[in-house]
Length: 273
Image 1 (cartoon, rainbow, N blue to C red):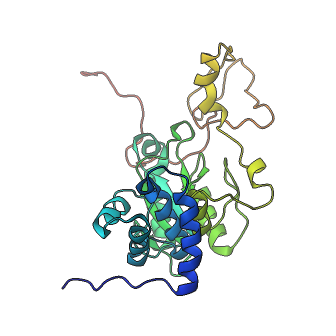
Image 2: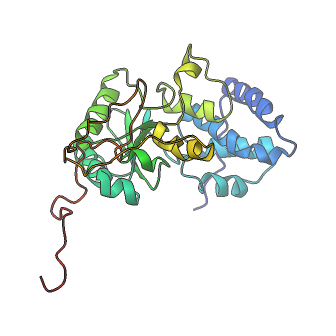
């Protein structure tokens, strides 16, 4: 049966969202260009893009429900059902997967008792696998509300979600301090993050991400010898990171779990041997 029209927001909520929406729409010469930030705005109200939220966006931009729904269902950053305060995304694309992302995702599913795109009973954590977090030089990577947690292992990832559920202060490897998913959605809608000191604390890209830029500028890269994981350097002093330097897992051998422990990588014999 066809669904009934979506209910409207309560009058006070509607008035507040309309004021915010007009501020967003005023940024664009063509009002329909404001659809993406408006979807983030309604997501900041309910924690997901509801039918009511899509109705609101359509009315503000003079778009049909179908036009709004086509965009809301295309982008994975828009949730279509209620979700947790913290979106924990585990990259399972090729590099993160072979570096341990698959193992992290499987252990988190068992540890939290949820599947992909499912939320813990306390409403704190929604777990999902992500195709790419665009941070391959720090693989395997986990994101919480789109903030980076680099060079993860199953053990560190489980501690991360345990701390989130316990209400502990959790700091990302790079980026601004964590806030809830609703608060994150409002920031993505284009409204300033007014928490004290958050801009200064946000930092920037890690050194591994900036190597190409430095080479393009003509800066000489320091001579580095990268040894296989677990193998100690011979006759060379270990590299000591400079203050504030954040090495990637490819620069600094670290203890990460194999993605497929039953088939460990190793030397392959030549044919006939």
